[in-house]
Structures are given as structure tokens and as C-alpha cells.
Image (cartoon, rainbow, N blue to C red; front, side, top):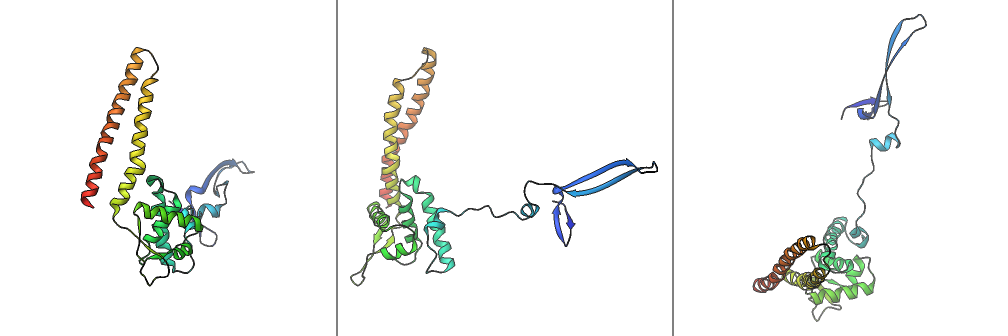
Length: 229
């Protein structure tokens, strides 16, 4: 963008400048031209236009992960890891607090205790307790405590096939089953004349075929996960 100088070295983008060209007569009847520049009148201050504020808003992970007790680089890494898993929480069908717990454990190179997790996440004790139970049932976390440890210690289970299996069972399988029921109900309420109803039923039939193919693939995927586990 072209710029011009204003005042003490301040630059204004040329897009914010109005050019003025006036034609008139002097008192003695001589026609003259006047050429001038003026700054555009804006609804927002010129300074805010030249130097706009940052547009990035804090993420949920920024609010969830506490910053005290650890270095800045560690906190940044933890927040980004937690943000990654919290963003996938809806897909996996788990609460965001559960995803945050897994993320904070995943981001730690050493096993974490209940107290460690509580100190790093702004989540209630009840949510942490429930989240740890859910994650252990899913096979996402494993306990690695020894007899010498005062508290249970948790580390992520990196066998992602377990999480994939949970996704198939908890989300995809249930949705496909519910979809079959809904498609059957739709076929009973197809509106329109014979021609219109035939077209709609044809579309529903195509949708049902794809739905059936997806359901038939589930056992195959489960078998592959078991073989590669």
C-alpha cells in the first residue's frame, strides 16, 4: 500500500487520503486551480486503523490450564496440547473437561497424580475424579504407581487403537443404529403424489444403501484394530 508522511515521521496509508481539486476565480477574475490533500474522516480513530489491535481471542485451553508453578514454555506447550484434545472432544463424545485431563497428562513427560492435575487445570475436584475414571475405563490413561508412591500416578496410553475402538462403539455405532430407525420411519411418511413420492423414495433408498454399507464396514474396522493392536 502507498504511504505518505504526516507530522513527525508518522505514515498514513494512501487509501486513507482524500484528494481535492477545486476550480475557482481569484478577486481579479483569474481562473485558478487548487489541489489539496486531507485525511479521510473515519468512523474509527486513525491510530486504531494504522495499528489495529490483535484479533486473536483466548482459547478455552488458555482458561483451563493454570500458569503458575511452571515455566512459560511448558505452559504454552500444555495449553496447545489441551486445546488439541478439547477441540476433538465433541467428535469423541466426551466432555471437554475429560479431554483437558487427558491433554494435560499427555503433555507431561512424567506421570501425574490427582494433585498434579488439580494444580495444572482449573477444574473442580469432582470433575477430575470423574474424568480420570472415564479415561481409565476408555483405556486412554493407565496407572503406573509403585508401592513407594503415596498417590496414584497416571500416564497416557499411547495405543490409540483403544481410543479408536471407543469412538466406533460410543459414537459411530450408536449413530448408525439410530440412523437405521430414522430412515425406516422416513419411508413411512413420504409425502406427495405417486411421481413425487417415487422420487423421494428413490433418494431414501440410495441413502439407506450407503448407510447399510457403513454399518457393514464396522466389524471389518474392529477386526483390523484388534489385529494391529
